[in-house]
Image 1: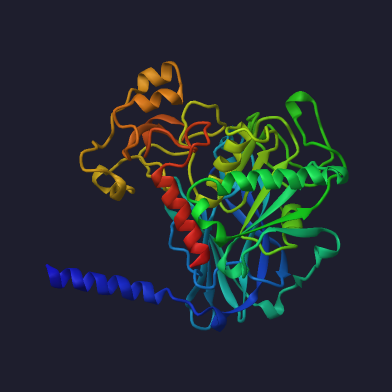
Image 2: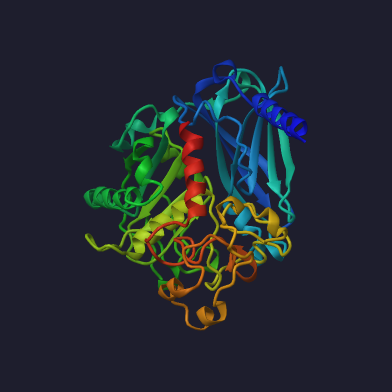
Length: 449
């Protein structure tokens, strides 16, 4: 048995070694932005290229080129044409994937959404492969082709002449730090001082919380001075429309609080004035709302009370970045959403903080569960459902324990969360649960080690 375990360990180590990629052998220290369109309905996805852009930097980690975290609704892989070696991969999600679960898509309507991926610029010709998950959460190839950087029409636009940027929190080389760019939406030129104040407030909130607090030196935070023609953003249900820079709007997919923009290229253009791994957009609106899609962008409204220890806007800021940066799922199950079977029954979700518990002994966060904690973990769910009050959860027998508590991912039955309460479950700013903290830490390490 010991010899078998040794063989397995050696084999695993060799597999990991096989994934090692020498950055300077295959890539330039610059970024190729590939803009493309995702078109289709619930069961169809068509990918078509739009444009290619070159940035004079690469902000990703040269030591983390092959993404093995298995997160996201999509994945892109880059293969060197000469050797056939996998030299880059990245998981991400999209507005298109969310739209595919809406009534409109289910009825067979086709729509197109702009999207982008950022890869380090390959030195040689390469094969690019796009994958999306099927209803069983398996990655299926959607499109592939070969590209040659020397023959591609790549645009090299310098938007620093148009939009100025500032370093709010800087610790060094972007390639070894998590780089976040914060964009203003619905702030006029006269309101830029307010925007800077909002950036200061929300970053203070983020760095006051674990695991961000102990990793402060691993982040670079930038913001861009990009005013809108008019103050505020669109609130269609109130009959309010504003000329904002990125066209963000409440009411996305029919959900009043959901704030999205379909103007992907404008967002990417303005963000490109600095090296970035993540985009955060603060919208100049007092109305509760936000949004967050894994490796796309996060959005938060800006009404908060300075000096208060608990603000709904602070919760939204942390919660949405949990989606965008950590790949975390919503753990609540009682709020209205626009999706049809966002998590199909009998299929294990890819997100690290919810589970269908199909094989309890293989629980994805089993290493954090005490031996005396039953799986699934009992709690007074019926009482909570009749009068939801997160404060009462502290009286539960398994409060403070990692387990598998039924009710998560928009589903009252069949999906489980790891902790009774968490920022991904209720509107609190007390903290992330141990499972969510671990997922965020893993992402920080991915960008910095």
